[in-house]
Length: 346
Image (cartoon, rainbow, N blue to C red; front, side, top):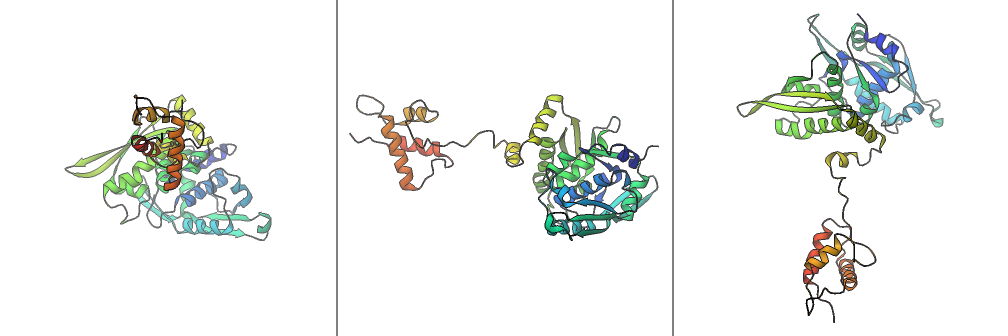
């Protein structure tokens, strides 16, 4: 049977993918679940170690190389120290049903930040994986191959943990969904005890945002279907499917775009640019302003439209006097109300 470490060694050339033992991808962080940045670091460390992840050896990576990775923060010794503390404190619990035993242990044994050449941005990061992780990796014959760019693009631990869990299941024959009890799903995505206790809060603040982010930045489309007994949600079925080629191209374009504004694009808020009243010139022929003026302005004697240039200047002066920005939210409604009360000086 092929080992996960062999697959990782064979794919050492592929810097776009990380081979993760399925036992880790499906593992449950029970105590001190790490945050999103620490999880990204975990994926980076495993990817850097590759086929040697099961060996009790020192692994190394330079800070300058970490900074080159799109999606990783511009880290320093101080920020890396915090992330390693998170990873060192995380406890992995995996139920090995075949061996009928639970494996409980840490991801890391030790990490060192050699800052002798820090001033030249040549800080050296070294680490040793923990025994529990190395044992999992050594015995593992199932793996998840994750797109690093997607992992580094995800912004919450809920998204990363759900994504790595689902990715470990994607290639299983004829399996396109999995049902979790609410407690299992909370554990898988790292929701701490006492947090988001009501399912409505769990769904709106963790599950649905995670699915929306994964759908925007990965090759998969996920859906979540709750199942109720009476009025209580007792389980959630997560389903997934590969995106068609055109949607994958859209995802690739999204990943290649700056991260700034990604949430707005995901929520649809970026699709309709905010209206702004023109800072200069006439309204004639400009929409929606010309149409709003002709529809709502009070006509002068003879039923004629007042001079639009005079209306325009009067509205700009009025906004300035009221300290209303011309790109204020709802400026079109403000202009409509002004038109209804505007009386030109004759």
